Structures are given as structure tokens and as C-alpha cells.
Image (cartoon, rainbow over all chains, first blue to last red; front, side, top):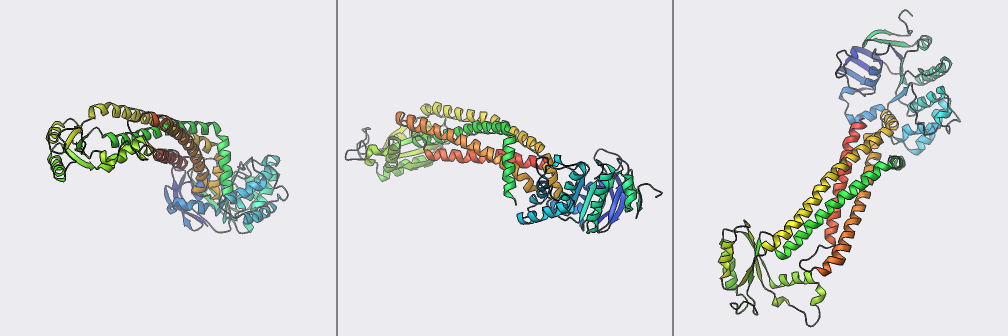
Length: 229
Length: 303
């Protein structure tokens, strides 16, 4: 589903590579944690998957497409197969919960009937049934992150990317979010999650890819946050 | 495509950046009006040149039956006309020439003074009373003595009109006004371009969160750009509407209602000239607003 072949990414004006000759292969339906300190290359990894950047060298394949060769006008098509969740939720404050989720479908031209069916279904799935008319600022942090997950998942993407989704949440709320991501993964969506949250990684026992200074230093199935787990 | 979303974004965008949009509209209005006025002056010069001849033209009048020139005893004969044309064609100072019949001359007079004057049983002039003419275009406005002296003594020639000394200051003044209007318009168009650019920058900043989400969920570039394009088009069209109103008012109240009746030395521009001016002003406005929008949205909201 996602494959990095000898991928190097060097930003303009920087001597050191953000990613240096890395090889990673993520199969369809996997749940992968991407761990590492700040500046280790996690964000660059995710941005390459989203084709926000192109690699300096090497090849990146996402959902069967080589992103280096993907024409600019085909990028939106790729992104429709990827859902993205961030630490800071990125909800539109002037839209209700339902409108925030529907927005993701409206802007890619989905029909009204599809939207009317998919939005309540997805809100129900993420545990926000009955809260569609609330404004984002009326919700707790955990609930806001659920809205963000609903928006990322409402188009049923093949891949869900989560960049520190529990970074702003307390441990109890984080567990709820992880259960939700796990459910989405079990339904067939590949989940790639960058995190600093050792507790969650240790608890979930999923595959762990650890980056350090742009290099993969560990790729462990059913791993923990630390090395000796 | 959800056009309702696009139009609601358009409405929000126009309201959010109202003062900037007003600035763009006013700058466009003034600059487009000046460009349009320059166009109208240009058309007016053409009208005058059509009647009086340009700075490069002299006119040879051929004899008529009741000619004031005593040398003329009858209408110019075919042989005399051919001889005059041959001299004209062979002269090295001449760039080109065309003939004007009595009827064409009469039509011009009717256009200048109004058709109504020539209707009824006793018109002040008839086509028959007009003079046939040969309009000569010179290669160099200073080199004209050879051709004048060559034709003036020919049989069938009543006289030669050389109004270039009289016409020159008039045409120069119109040209100065035209280029002055266009010169000022260039600065205002530049100001309008910068304002359009700034408006887009502000709009992109105000909508950065929506744009970020649209990019992430895979909205097409067109969908993201459309509200910006429509915003630019709406402001451009309001500017065009104001400029068109100003040009039309100028033509109607100044040219048509005042000058046309009082100053009958030249035909004056008609409504078709205003339509032409509005057309070119519209094209210019769309280019001024849409081109920077397309360029800047590519820069600010790169997908």
C-alpha cells in the first residue's frame, strides 16, 4: 500500500537529509506506528505519502501509484484515497460537526444524497451520534478529534494518516481515540500513525517503524515504543 | 460540483474583503473610463480624418457644371479624369489615392448636417451639385509641392485643398488628449493589478484553513480556485459597469446632446463607438483581474 525504496529527501538550503536512503514497505490493512524524536523525519515521511513533497531520490509508491511520476492534476485523486488527522484537529470553527464532515465530501463533488447518508453513518461510527448540530467549540478535545477522524474517514479512504492524533489529549481520551483508529483499521483501512506517546505504542503492540536522523533504525512487528520491548 | 458552496464562498469572500473590493472597483472604474475615453478620442479622429482627410492627405476637386472656377466649363470628362489619375499614379510623392464620387460626397454632407435637412421638395444641395474628388495620400507630409503643382493646372481640375496646416494642431491636440488619458490609465491599471494581487493574498490568508483541508481531502485546483476567480470577475464587471455608464453618459450628454448640434465642422462619433469602447474596456478588465488571480492562486494555494 505504501512503499519507500531508497528514499532520500533533502530540503533546499540544508546539508543534512531529512530522510536518508530509507526502505519501508507497508501492506494493505496494516497498522503502523512511526516513532522517533522531533526532527527524526516522521513529518517528512508523512508528507511524502501525501505527495506534498517529492523525494530527492528513490521511489515512493502509494496506493499503487509512484508519486514521483504523478502529474500535478492527479494529486487530488491520490489524496481522495488518503484520510489525514492532525494533533490540532483543524476543524472549521464556523461550521457544525456535520458540516465539517460533509465539507470533505462537498469539495470533491459528492452528491447531496451520498453526503446525507454518509455523514450520519460516519458520525455514528466515531461515537458522535446526535452531536451533528454542535459547533466544534462546544465539544471536548477528544470529541473534536473524533470529528476530525470522521472527516478523514467519511470518504472511506484506503489509507488513514494520523500525525500525533493524541498529542493534545489526556491518556483516557487517547485510549478512546486509539480504539477508534483500531476499529477503522480492522475494517480494512491501512493506518499510519506518527506519535510520541510511548504508552499507546506499548499497549497496542502493532508494527513500529522508528526513525532517527532520517534513517530507519528499527522496523519491528508487534513492537513497543522503546528498543528492548 | 457543488455550485452552492462556490457561490456562498463568493458571497462570504466579497463581504469579508469589502474595503479591498471597493478599492479595486474604484481603481478599475477610473482606469477603464480613461482607457475608454482614449478609445473614443481615437474614433473621433478617424471620423474627422474620414471627412477632412488626415495629416498625410490632400484633396483634388474635379470640375462640375456650375463650378466657381471659371476654367471649368462642364463636368469633368472621363478623359480628363483619367489624365489626372495617371499624373497622380505616376508621381513619386504619392503613396496612394482613392476617388470619391458625387454621391459619396453627398452622403458625407448628409451625415455631417443630418439627413432631415435634405428631405423635402427644395433641398439645400443635391448629389449632382457636389464635386468629385481624388484623395491623395502622401509618402511624406513635407513633400507635397510636386504633386500639387502637377495636378493644379490640369484640365478638369477645379482646385486642390491642402488643409494640413489647419488640421495638424487639431489632430495633435486630440492625440495629446488620447495619449494623456492612456498614460494616466497605465498607472491606474498598474495600481489595479497590485490591488487585485493584495486582495487575493488577503483572501487566501483568510481562507487558509479551508484551503488546507480542501487540498488534503483531494479537492481539485479548479474547485479551490473558483471562488477567487469569481470574486475577481465580479469586481471587474462592477468596474466595467461603472466605466460603461460613465462613457455612455459622456457620449450622450456631451457629444450627442451638446456638441453634435452646435459644432458642425466634423461628423461626431456615434453609439457604435461607445459599444466598441465598452467591449475593449471589458476585455481589459477581465485580463487585469483574471490573469493575476490565476497566477497568484497558483502561488498561494499550490495543490
